[in-house]
Image (cartoon, rainbow over all chains, first blue to last red; front, side, top):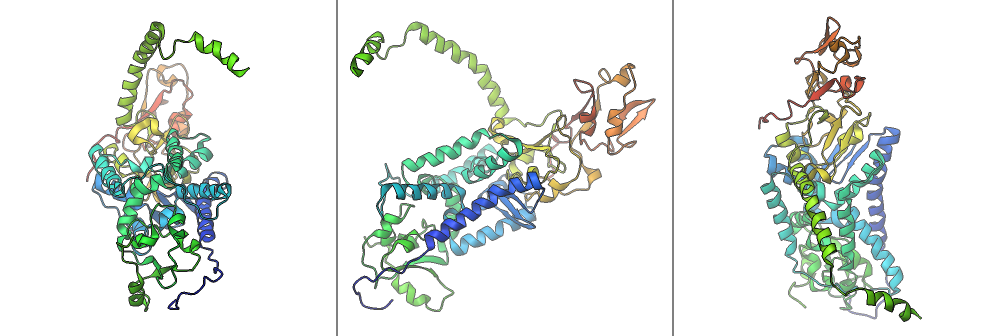
Length: 294
Length: 209
């Protein structure tokens, strides 16, 4: 940092992709194993999945499902509110990390990415999407879903959310030796991979939209060091979420802090920064890319 | 060779045309499914709770239940008797909500599910205050009431013996003040169809907000 541009050094390896994948595996194992523990061993320490998950007496409630139910019933029940607090605080500070680091649907996508990478034999690739939509469709999905739920008078996303359905299908398979019919939704969502890498997450997921909205002014952002950046565009090609980090979009509302661009950068010009709490924040703000730059 | 194989088949078909018989077959087939569809639609919006299909203990009334429940399935996971089942999309807006079919596996009133519900859909309440429904004896099916024999399976199974079910000259009678609607009596009843059933009379009252 701060040095004049030199010949590119040998890249210091960042293991962020590996860490993320391990984290996703851990998060998936949490929902994969707990039905077995509950059913066969009567170990009730972990219950539920990403609609509401409990580790002992630490309860989490998914914010969108909670807000949906709150809007419809208009009743406040404290365990419910307290369960929603921690995910909301995480989203406020770290942004949409649930999407990229925990969500089982994204975990399946990530496996597909890895398989695709193996097959394509190119170190850095970007598959061209069949078509792209304007990004604000995401907000339409969120508002539309909430409005629909309020018109019908029953929450919709609680039983149709793909991340929740993954958990429920595992639980149904273990407890009742059958699968629920709505699991087809998961397959449909996974098939949208053929359109673009995160088609559902990018445009249609109301939960992702809510987390993005909460994390609009998040503390953890990925900044670009303009002194070391060579504008190679590898980050644009590596981003599975279809955003362009080189145009400063990594600091915007749609970034999920997955860190793919950090891992791929050959000059180590991108890194995670916790703004506002670090003493050098003023300095880092200067290094931010003006968002209009093409 | 391949071309020769395929060409005679193609020539038999009149490309893209549907014969009258096929068209009528499709039409009749579709019209036969219409009542099914109408039935499915009514099921889509109406509550799955009915006789012997009950909500777990401490449940809020049905007007709030589907709105409050976030379908996390934790009640079904903690249930040590696996009596709580999850509904699927065939029940429409009620998909993912818990239900107990008491004639299959009744509720043993361990109250574990009420302790884990994160949204207050199942409220933590004492065991004796549970009101999942009310047991109703069918006097035209019950062996003892018909005078065909002496059976007290329901009386023996009841967790609030002599309070919820007491014997009036050996015939079982249900006391509304103590019956929790757990369905142990229904599961124990040897008669088919069951001579004692749980009616979810408390599920359809209007909830206090």
